[in-house]
Length: 300
Image (cartoon, rainbow, N blue to C red; front, side):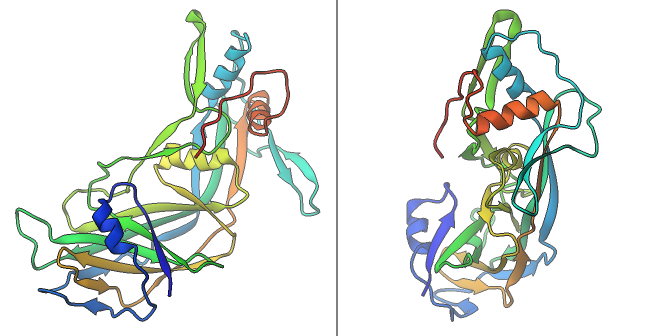
């Protein structure tokens, strides 16, 4: 039997209690308690991209770090960046971008595995006053685990915010006003969205991210900052099987007959642009002593 963990901070406690019970692997594809169960009409089979690009401008964060040390006249430069990496022999090296930036500043670039679940679900008991669908979900069991994790799909038009704290050690919520000598940074709270395009069209959506467990915290934060998705660490090459289910208000359950399969890609990470800015971000992320004030950390 598998335990279930639901990744949503917005569900009522009663719903969480209902869904957190143990479930056997031989659950029937359709369970009728009272009335007719919901119908899962279609599932988008092209839901996984193991090389999704992402990029973010972190120049304001670097400017704040410099400003905090009294350096008020620094001018960002273009360049090939500065990224710490490990070669095939396990040696620590520094790599530079093959494509220098044309805009001055410090930029985070990379790729990750993006999942975009889309399911069209209807229920015959739905009325103009009330949607009878209680939950649409995608569940999977991570490798080397017996705990089933459930992602909730939404038909909300991406109007609901899921607050998640940043991962990196450098504060990313910065207020910089150099003429008034204001330069403060605290832990950023990023507003995650479901990724749903239109509210109330019976198309339930959830975008989700997997990143290499050794990926930089800056890459994870860039995914939240730019793509509004929650990044979860996973082993490169891991293959995950996702079960799509729908439950109505009477407790009737429907399950899509086949599971969706996705493989976690290797992903990439690069700090591009101003080399000094990139080096500064890395040093602070490692809490290195470079005679600059250390950032405040907010626990996740």
